[in-house]
Image (cartoon, rainbow, N blue to C red; front, side):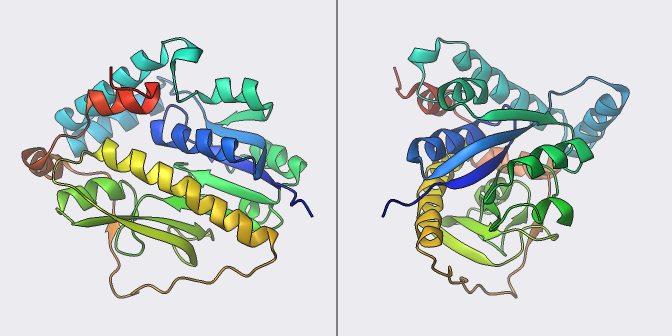
Length: 277
């Protein structure tokens, strides 16, 4: 008997390359019937937005912000190339290809966004680098539950930019986790996890592209198990090794820059175009 795809809502981060890579692969698998994609809204240069930007510059330093802007700039330049010349498609291009609906939101917890998701009656929600905390009323909508894909080993690397901190700490291994979400942040239960080696020359974009590819295979494993009616076993982790990390401060990024590059134009080009030349 043919298995029915899971009716899915994906939460994605607009302009976030790793989120787009994951979406490209999940949609190709066809085991998740994506009916709706909820995207973060465009950046608005309002008083509130400028105040937040000023706060980030004060915390992380002008160098870190400049590097992030440069990374985004090169990504956007590659996305200017024709649709057929790129391996990775934008969320709007994927919408045209697969026919799902798109809802842009300033916050996942707005009543309008909640109503849009509720109307779809999804089996599952998949959060892909989504920057907002989901409140219980959102988590309660899907029939099966809400999955989060986390770019780090839980509980050693919780919260944000786990990949940055693993590289800064010169770890020999990094990891990818898929876990059910609750009202807390990056908590258990973990239902899929995979570790991989970190090479000395690996940049954070190397790491994130690798994690996005691993996630797609882990999500397929999760789907297969759920469709067969299996209870996904919880992966036991050492709960004493808990680490909480946030956006790096200026001194953290300076120390990182002595060790390795933050991003590579060649790596970004290959991830978006699918070739190095």
